[in-house]
Length: 136
Image 1 (spheres, one colour):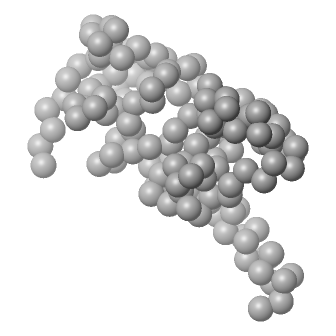
Image 2: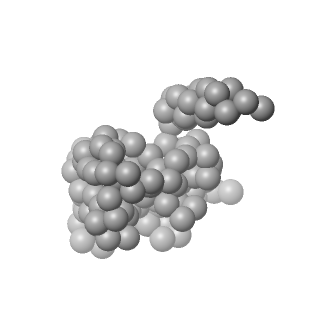
Image 3: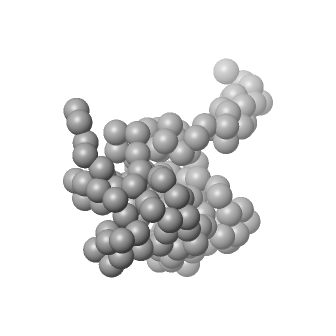
């Protein structure tokens, strides 16, 4: 295959990945680009493959070693789902807060957010969450 054709295929695939929702994207982290350390702008919302884990940039940032998910974890959010529901991040921010009614995993328990913009855990604010019974 000619290099020009290969590059066209890669661009087409990457454009299609932008249309995939987070739940579906979380199943294919390997399809997403890795950081290149080319000092290019990474726009907020961009998803990357970070050691097999899908991450999303929380803010606009530069593609540098200082800004990678290990060195600047607050600039990134995990895009992780279990049985179709988001796994709660270790740290909530305004960019990854739970929406009213959103179901989210905390450990092995599923909870429903009772408020919009919920940045609390069931441990820190039990009144902000409702435990949901999981049936398999």
